[in-house]
Image (cartoon, rainbow, N blue to C red; front, side):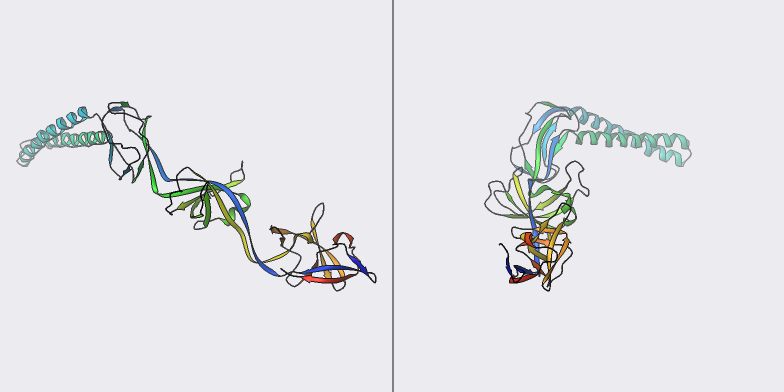
Length: 322
């Protein structure tokens, strides 16, 4: 609006600054992932003699997925158990002899040590046998099978994968300026690519530091909601409400006069004007937050800004509010 002159005064419009709740909504990309996902490998190399992997099936923690050849270890275990029985009987006899000074203490100690060594060998063999049993680490859902019955596998071979699908996690990154606004327990809203409804997740962890290359901080949120469109691996758009302020001082965006090094507002003082350097904050389509320089109840000029000089006389034709 072009200001008009009335008896030497410029006729302009004003705006009364008042507290107003405001927040800045941002959208960032994210990924929906399984809460836990593990590639199943064998601890030792061996030939598969039993395979219980049904692709896509649910499994329980500790359920046998595959069994490697262990007959050699089983034979060694039986041999050690027989030797233990014999040595234990020897210790029992020598204990009676020791009581009547029939043998020396040293001879008895050597026999007892042989028993302890055999028990340790048995325990070691039992552990080796357990390594030939490949079991599910937790309740979950099996992925695709990469091996067949009778195949030889090594620790580097991926047999299958297990995913925990009861709960999902949402991973995304936020710009560093918002890092202080995100903490454990913060609720986020998101939509998946191609999805028709919104979903919620709760932040369970943050990276704790900002990535120097991207100037962002990684965030992980837990999704407990059950919905057919929530599938691990899908793209998600995360909506975050940042910088909420219940009493922000907002002014129309056209009231700001951009300068080379700062921004200014025109503050009405009786029938004259004062040029104020201000700092701005959150912006929306029509208003912008003023962080300093004005207070609630002040009247600022919103029209004819380019025609007003420091000593201009003003006449307010209209005063508006949010």
